[in-house]
Image 1: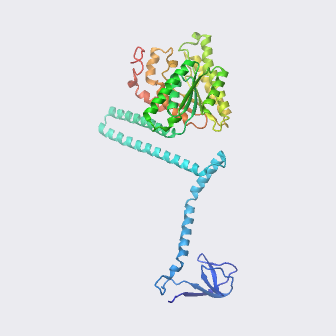
Image 2: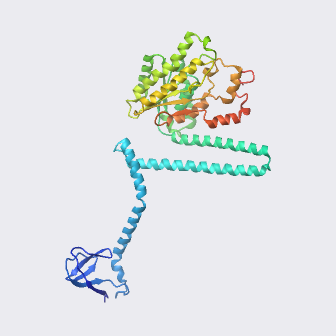
Image 3: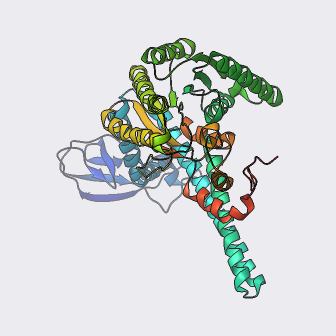
Amino acid sequence: MTTLAKLHVYPQTFEGPSTRDGHLIGALGPGVHRLDVGVSTSRGRGLCLRKCRSFRGGDGGDFEKENSKGGNRRNSRLKEVKMKKESQFWKFLRSGVLGKFNLLMGSDVDQGKLMANMEGLLSSAAVQIGRYIVTMMSTGVVLAVGFQLSGGDSQMNTLIWYSWLGGVIIGTMIGANMVLEEHCSAGPRNVVITGSTRGLGKALAREFLLSGDRVVVASRSSESVQETLRELEENLKGLMVRSGSSNKSLAHAKVVGTTCNVCDPEDVHNLANFALNELGSIDIWINNAGTNKGFRPLLQFTDEDITQILSTNLVGSLLCTREAMRVMRNQPKGGHIFNMDGAGSGGSSTPLTAVYGSTKCGLRQLQSSLLKECRRSNVGVHTASPGMVLTDLLLSGSTVRNKQMFNIICELPETVARTLVPRMRVVKGTGKAINYLTPPRILLALVTAWLRRGRWFDDQGFVCS
């Protein structure tokens, strides 16, 4: 067998390791060098052994295969360098995000889990945006087809526009609720609700309970508390029977209750201790207790009426907010406090309900002050605006004309609670305003006003059967 080689004669002078074509040139002997061997320290001229690319060995094999491993290594290194260059932006972005979270949450954050959660969140957001775009494109196609079929009739085109707008509003609301339902599957919350034995308060308690949360109901009347507990427990058992083992979140659901007069500081303190003993912590505290003495001029309100409205709506909310802040600031995860908005919250006039409106305006001022006081704490202070809800509080002293307006804009407590609770469960930060009567809902109510006549009350103001 013979091996043919191609010899190159050239001066070789170097002080240390020399390279040629990116590889070290090592010594085969005095003055003789070959690629991919050790480093020679010889000086002067010599023979350098180079592989010949145009001959084959005696055994029929390619001469170049002798160094194929070295070539493969070179190619793999080049690919690695290229991949590193291409991923520099993503590494920079990832390191920046992780650095920010480490700064905020400490250096012991699990970066792998953090990035996985972020990627999942971004993926979910992309899916929802894609759905929305597809929906809008589909409705656009329907709109264009409708215009073609209308034959240029202006009235028909107007009807098509209204139908399209209503479809977009309803689709947006449904999509938003779907997203909230996906994010509301997280573990149970510990919730305290004052004034929760009737009306909106009881509806909120039921909705939290059916979401798998642990709820404390409170009211002045012990009988009302016990009756509400029995009703809510029956609701929970009924849902568990219907859903069977498919709804695992209900396994943690729990409802307890106690009496509390929110105007009494000692009662409020006892309510907080009761919740801590029963639940271990408080994640959400809702100041729902409130009262109104009907629609009439201020001169017709008695001293007792004014004192009770101010004590329950304003003083009670102040005492409960202070107690909730005391508890939550000592909890690792903090907590969230909700005060209920109402007529007069924005400073607008409330004729015939001047006392009630002044208390709600005062709560808005309280909200603004607490936002600055709690800026660097882990306690969030928020407002919840249920809009106009068909409760005894709203209907007390209302006229026939009022009830005709209620047909258009009012909703049942259960309907409002189904919208507010998912948003309360996932609230972050502080200073959020969770409203039921959003602009799309108001527009939808106005557009469909002719369909809502007689929904709750007839022309004489009597309840529709």
